[in-house]
Image 1 (tube, helix red, strand yellow):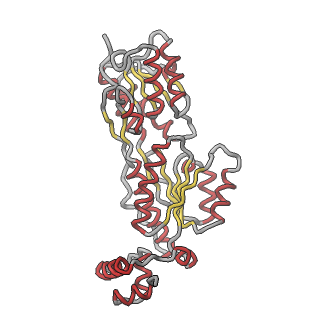
Image 2: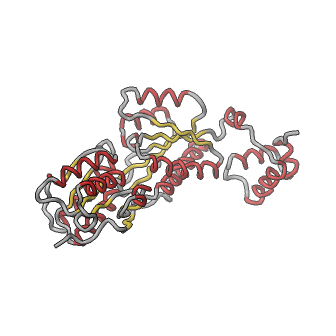
Image 3: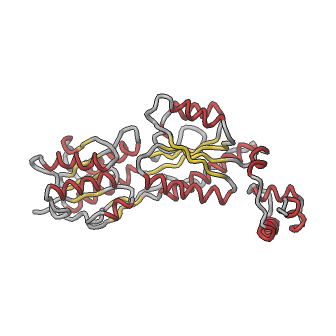
Length: 345
């Protein structure tokens, strides 16, 4: 017969309420009791009834809300969220939304009206949309935002920052340090604050190096391969051409590399190319791309951890502790590979 929670309690020598608290990862249970309960669960192969747990209000689902064409980013975020949710007894609901849809807020409201959503992890651009954030506050639902920036959040909820500005500054400064003066910036859509922060870091590094801003080298576009290829084709028809390209993500950089090869421009001898995020695109190209490693799995794990802490604090009527949040956010770090070198003299 299938083991019950009372069977686990009897074997562990505790009450069934203690078993329930252990399963729900409540911090009030001591380590010795936890070990006894988990040992009994394993010995009896006990499987908690998820539906019953949800009906009792424990713990429920964490919803991951995203709109990002970069599958690498989404997969890494899922890995980080899943690991933390499993460790703390929560289920993960993955829900893509179209940020450009007129009915995006209604769709989110409809999703929240069904099931047992305990909290949400919001990624850009939703985490940076004031109307949507305000709607969630009105519902008094726990959520955590992943945001490009370094400033403390004005609101009293967990917020995970990614320091795109400093990473972009480091990339541009690296290129300038190699001797490049005509450095192009291929951006993505400005609905993503990360694009604006990366452009801002690029401009700040140029100014710091005494390189005059050239708006013909700042080319807006989209975060995809085709956009990078087309814009690079245009840049390579100019005179003088850039000697380096800083692409706002690796897909754009891969497109830039493709156009350079079609135009018979040698990379890196005639054109250095740098991406951002350290996705598989950066390692599957030839030459391999210099880029900035963005720790998406760690970012997601931190977001889930602080969200769950916020949920538990709300249920217990205590303040949410945010002292473990990184002081200045997660900083993507420069990874130098084969796509960069000093400019030809």
